[in-house]
Image (cartoon, rainbow, N blue to C red; front, side, top):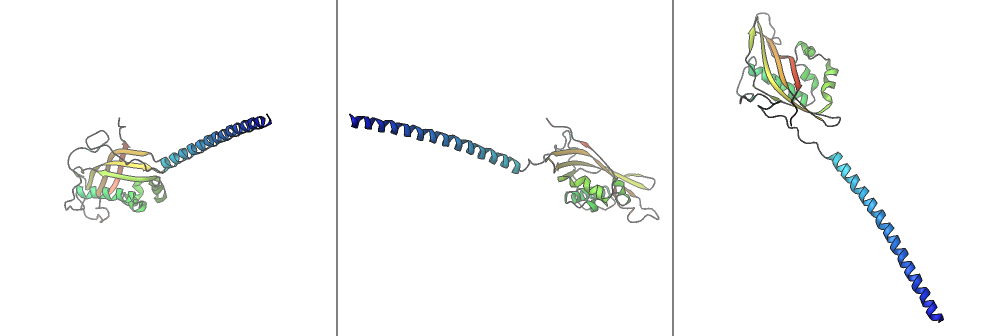
Length: 208
């Protein structure tokens, strides 16, 4: 009888230890699962933060917010600086300089030594430094408008840009008006060169 009682106690003790171990294993598994889920969530958050933003996709020509679909891109054929194509080349250069962060040189392409931009050098740079990307598509220039010794031409432009803060994309559509003095007596080479007089941009229509 004593042996049986002792054996019974051992069995009970063994079962109790097994239950405790199982309980401990359950607690450990739950904790590990919580920890693993936290790691997964942290990884997903970091991956989302590090993922590059979607490419800028400006509206296509002929669609709302796109350039005119006139099938006449800016020509790469030889041109004279005082032609309409010469004016379009100034616009291309201007936006290329902005995209490269060369703000002072870009500002110098405005009339009156850059003052026609409406900002001094620092304010002009601050206007564009808030973008991580700034691109422009240039349309075919219009005809040169001549009158009273002055020349004007309008060049269509489409802007696609991305802000540094929040990485929000911006799309704009509009035109650049350039001016130069005609070949008249007393006009300097600077006055006879195309310079930006004004830029008229508005937000592109929201795409569905």
